[in-house]
Structures are given as structure tokens and as C-alpha cells.
Length: 219
Image 1: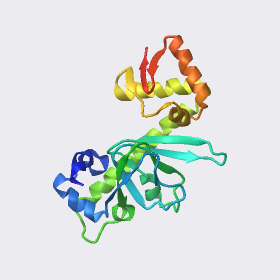
Image 2: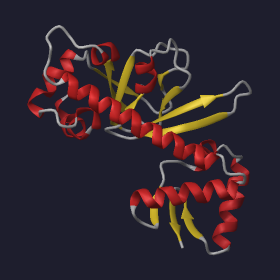
Image 3: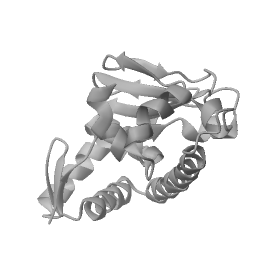
Image 4: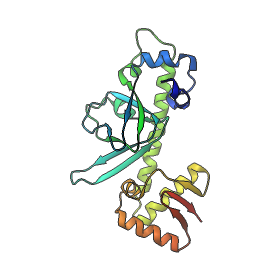
């Protein structure tokens, strides 16, 4: 647990909480850590929404698969970020999404009941923890609306350029890496991979961008 102190201290859930209280707090929250191999399902669709997770190392993808087997990537989760918190707070009976490891990953799972309800020890950090959680949910809501803004575009070209523009603004640079390979990017944008690859090729020939795998530069 101690090797992840730096990640936990940067986690938005623990913002403005005394680092000296961290281990006591994690014990109070019923924290447990688990390791998952690449492509392993961390939380499966239909499983109970009882935990709030934190990525400690590696990365995860939140995915949905429709009746016909088409996969949509909802988001990518990096170290220090939370997952499944919206469903735990809403107390839904079953998760409508699956969370898959992109690579060898370590995660921390917190009992959502211990976060949402003050414990009998009346720990001083609890109100700050709930405030941080609500702020994080608001941030995720903004990100969700940004994704809707991208996927609601009519063409593959418009969706791709809207996504790349957003990534450029996030990094503050015209040159950046994205967390997706071609298939994953197609699933995130909700387009066909072949059409996406063709559009990237057109944009490169038109001098609008350069790309190499997951590295892009807007010209």
C-alpha cells in the first residue's frame, strides 16, 4: 500500500485531507487492493455496484457492449482516477458497464457504504471526503457531456477532429498522445475502424495532421 502513497495523495478523492490520516482512513473505508492482468474484467456488467475504485497503476477502460456485440468505450481511466463512483452513489443494483484492464493494473476498491454514510467513529475527514466525491462526480458529468458533444457529430471526420481538438486543449499542445489504439479510438468515437483509418489518411494528405499510432500533431 505504501508504494502507492504518491498516487493516493494526488487522487482528487483525498484532496485537502491530512496525509498522516491516510492509512487510518483507508482502513475505515474497507480498502483492498487487487492486481489484474491485461484484458481482465475488473468489474463486470450486471455485478453489484458496491465499490468505488481507484487506479493505482496501469489503466482501465469503461466499456459497454450492445445486444449485437458492438463495443463502445465510454472512457479511459488512468492512475489516481476513480471509477464506478456514479453507480455506487446512485445505489444502482447492477452495473450497466464493464471495466476492463488495458494492461497489467493495480486498483484499490473502497466500500461505498463506508464513504456515503458516516461511521460510528465520527472520523473528522468524512465530510471532506464526501465533498471531494461530489466534486469528482460533477467533473465526470462535464466529461460525459463533452463525449456526447463529440459523438453527436454527423461524420467520422467531424468526430475525430472534435476529439483531437479536445485532447489538444487538455494538454495545452498541438502535439500529444491519446490513450487509444485505432480500434479503441473507433469504439470511443462510435465509428467503423476502416472508416476512421481512411479519414486519418485523408487528413494527413491534406496537411491537417500528422500521426503515428497513438501520437498526433495538429498542423
